Image 1 (cartoon, rainbow, N blue to C red):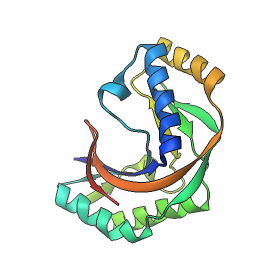
Image 2: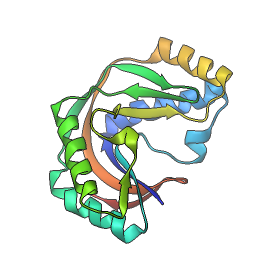
Image 3: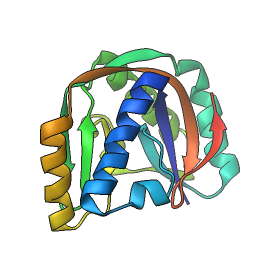
Image 4: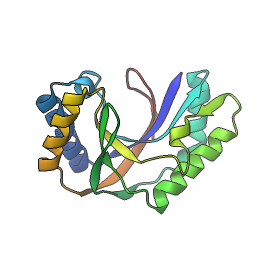
Length: 172
């Protein structure tokens, strides 16, 4: 089963990022993020584990390292062919957080880290649109080109969640 450890933002940042998600849904006609109630978040780690209990154990082991911090979100980007996102700067704090989480995952033989969320492979991002067709991607990009403003966001909490659909299991 797939699990993710994600960071969530202060209310003002959440509101701004939610507006981008909602507006992309409207201009593109793709409501994947809305229909699946995916909140604005920055995934620190994605991993496979055999059970919720094992995933919870990993999350509880790193809980003490999960601190509030401000991050910069200066730009947007795409993962071709279907995802558009707001890109966060990988500062020292995010890099260390990724290291701590991945070191904990390595301690558990029954947990497998996704290769795109390992240090030096991870692009910190906040997904704004997902499962976009070529035309929907163009519409989303045109909208963000006109609307996106660089911002900072305060990470206020973290959670362990299951994917497909997005469901929080634990929070700190």
